[in-house]
Length: 254
Image 1 (tube, rainbow, N blue to C red):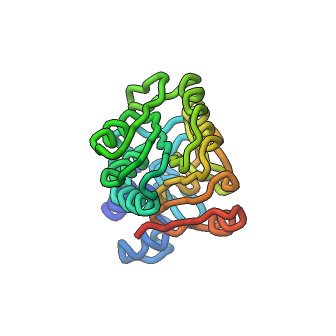
Image 2: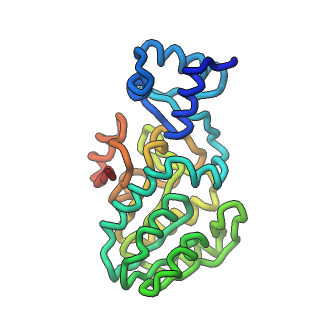
C-alpha cells in the first residue's frame, strides 16, 4: 500500500516512539479511535506495523535485534530519563556489573560524577565512558568482541563474571513478554546476562516502554529473579500485577 499523509505521519510517530497506544495516536492526530484502528489495520496488513493489545509497534523479528546505530537513536530521551533515575538510586562506593545495550551506556554516562564505584562490564562502550571518571575503577570482561556494538560475549566472559559478587547487576533487555519473561536475541549474550543475575545481590533491569510486549527468542529471566525495573512509562496490562506478584519495585522515570 501507499500510506496517505496521515498514515505516513502515524508511521513516523511510531518509529520515533518505538510503540504507541491507539489512544495516544488518536489524541496526537485529532482523529477518532476508530480512524486510528482502521489506519493501524491497513498498515499492519501491509506489514508496516505490528499490532498488540491496545497499541502498535514497528514490525520486529523474534530472532534478530534491530541495528545498533538505530537502537542508539530509538527512544533516546526515554533512555536518558531512565538512566538518571537509575543513577539516583546507585549509592557511591558500591560495586556494579553493567551489560550490553544502549540503555546501560546511557546509565554509564549518568554515573560519571559518582565516587568510589567499582564497575565490571562486558561492554567496551561502557568501559570507555566510565574510564573518564577518575573515581571509578573499571574492570573489563574477557571474551569475543562483537564489532557491531562492542559487546563482549562467550564462555570466557561467563567464566570471568563468575569470579565476582557485586552489589548491583544492571542489565538492559530486548523484550518483556506478556507472561513476564525477559528475553533477548543472542544466546551468548543471554548466558552472560544469566551469570550477571547469579552474581549480583540485587538485579536491576532498565527497559524503555518499547520493550513491553516485544518478542525475542531467548529467555533471560523471569520477574521473580529481579529486584527493580526502571522504565519511562507506566507498564501496560498485565505487567503491573505481574510485577507486584513478583515483588519487583517499578520505577517510572519522569
